[in-house]
Image (cartoon, rainbow, N blue to C red):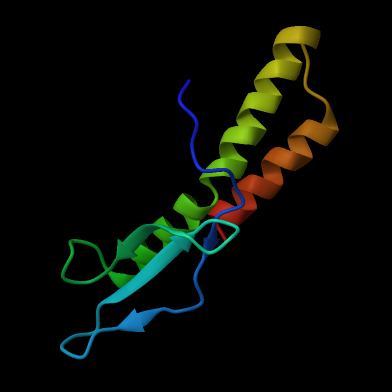
Length: 98
């Protein structure tokens, strides 16, 4: 598996509107502030609420992957899931869908 930029990924507090329209965009950055992705809203095919939801989901991607890998590892080795692992998965889902 290829490696991705390690998490956590954060949504930059700077939600800008350009001077010509009401388009919002969100920058997803890594833990040292390097911009990884921009998610844009209106005039780019999605409304601003959907753009915000997409930004939340994108920023949560490393935690979601980590939680899923952990769940699968525990399930494959023990044949069951532990509440600790399920709690980590729930935290990642909460970050993705605030």
